[in-house]
Length: 258
Image (cartoon, rainbow, N blue to C red):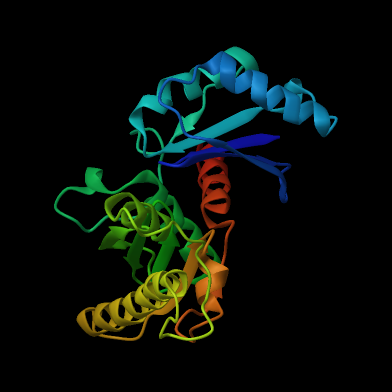
């Protein structure tokens, strides 16, 4: 089995693939100070719950946007899974994506993995909207090449910032209000967050399409993708397994070349 590790700013996702499909997926909060041994204590318990043995993991691939997590995750794979993990961004790992930017190294590993997966599954040209710690918009052409994107504060990050900066405003759940005009403080905040981000999504996709010079498919991923998809016709596809799928595709393509 292959272990794919997607280390984001908020959570680290560990996914197991049996060669044909994802069979298990677990999350743990990101922490700069967590050691390889700590990861293994947590992961071994989850493997036990599913009647799986560590020896069944024969390969690994890592994508991380948190540099401090890379070494302990690599050590985890070497020490406990007896393998050297492929790492997105290292010279020996080919993505088969041309990054058409002045400094390709600036692009986050997760965004490139999403580009690989989106082109493989849905074709292009496309806008990929990822609802993560940041809300990102990434543009790929019909060949799958990466043309840049947009980064804005994530939905939950904005909610947290608002409650921290305004003493009298409570932290609210992100959900679709029944009306745009709120009749209470909570419903007013919920409307501002939900419809504010919805308007940003629709407006940003329209502006991106105009600048790109043609129609673009629109794909959404991340935890809040289904919620916003229900409220707009602009999103054509929702795929919450996009990054994990991309990691498996990249691993398979690189192993075949060895």
